[in-house]
Image (cartoon, rainbow, N blue to C red):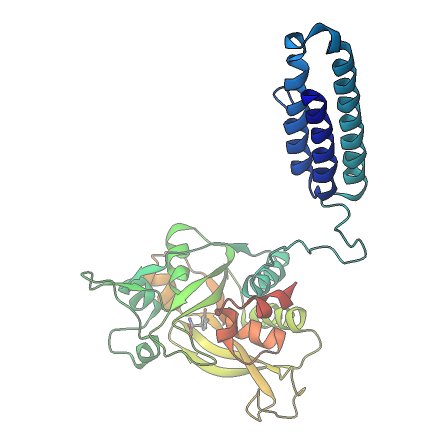
Length: 338
Ligand code: DAH
């Protein structure tokens, strides 16, 4: 009989198809094809009233049995999926899972945060200044007049059409801006991007980062400067030797540079320290009286300032050789700083 054949064909098809189910999606799809509202079985059930009355009970029974079988089989498969997850039967549960990729903070940011934490613990707060500066704040007010030789090291990029606007070459101009707007006493650090017209090599990049420091009060002395900077060096680099050398900066007087014993060779001399045994980590000094004057401070203040390159500190901290690695965005490099 025609309809009986159809029922057994549907049963055969269903049990064939069901062997290949690989996902829950497929399972749901097959369910709807066979016993969904418009499925093969449901369609036949609905057509029963059109059959000759004498065969209706038999066909009805056969269809209901088939429907029950299909439901039971689908339920069995669905349970397997629940126990083993998607793609049951295919999965090798002994394999390691797919790792979830989590990002990392950039090594320069990690070092910057470490620097900032040390100064926060000493009572410094954090301020920022503009990346586009005027000639006055970047140079003149810092005691660097137009033809001063120290401008030679600060070749930079000027803003087209604005003779006096440039990308700041250091964070020191923020010293002036803070003093213009905030009456001392104050103690701040100023992290941020700086720009110079430098060729790219292992230790130069046209964009880099500095952290400036400024502490101004009535009687801040050179010994305060020494205490703060030595404390910083020990907490940043651990068990190192530290030395201060006289130096020159137009905006500090006297000026010095701070060196630590080479973290690679421990001071014996190697390629990292150029055989010297020492690594320079920052410049500093007592704030020059002209700085207070140029910032419009009327009262008598004393203070010290310092400035360090974040890339340089990071290279020393991580014992790396080439600052270009910080900017190449190579995940194999960056992922090592978890
Ligand atoms: N601004 C200097 C530079 O970029 C670094 C510096 C040296 C900053 C001495 C200071 C300082 O505040 O006291 O080379």
